[in-house]
Every structure is written in structure tokens, then in C-alpha cells.
Image (tube, rainbow, N blue to C red; front, side, top):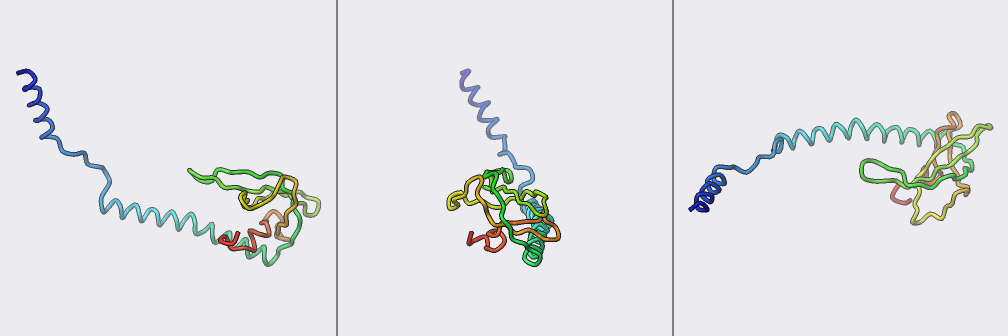
Length: 142
């Protein structure tokens, strides 16, 4: 008798409950999320692409080639979930040492610390630099 009463109570409570609703999920919220994402892309990524293109054009226009010495090959945290393999190097212009970095491809590069690589720096602003490969090759060919 007691177990029947218990089952009736459970049935009654199950019948009267509705499935939980997820707050903020719906057509309006999805559209709002898309708009926010577009704004983030426009305000964050587009200026970066423009600046990097501008910097690359200045290096092509005012660039001077020189040798740099690799002092570190590392995986650097990039964003929330990933990392990027980078080459860190030093180079000297007018007796001043500068540091720079470029993309490292550990599966195809045979680079070691102490190796020389060719970099391009801006004659007017020597702290602006890129590796020759990063400047000259499109991303899909690297």
C-alpha cells in the first residue's frame, strides 16, 4: 500500500513537470549571436589583416635583407585552445640588436638554435621585420 502511494506521488510529480527550457536559445538569440560575431570579426580581425598587409607592403618597399640568428624554436599559446610554432631570432642593424619572430614548420623545417635565416626589416623602422619566407610566400605554400 505504501509503495503504491509512493508511485502515485512520483507519477503525479512527473506528469506536472515540463521539460526545462534553455534560456536565451531561439531564433532571436541566434541572430543576435551572429551579429555579435560579425562585429567581433570586423573590429578584431579586419584591422589586423589591414595592418599586416600594410606592414608587408612597407617591408617590400623599404625592405633590407639581412641574416638573423635563431635563439628559440617554441610552441607559443595562441588563443584559448591552440598553439603556434614560432622561430625567435635576433638581428643587428646599425649596432643595435633587434628581436623578431616568424612561423616555424617543425614537420618540414630542419632548423636549429644558432642557425642563420634571412629576414627582411624596414630600413626606416628596423624593429619591423619578417622572415623572408613569411614575407614572400603565401600561407598555403609555406
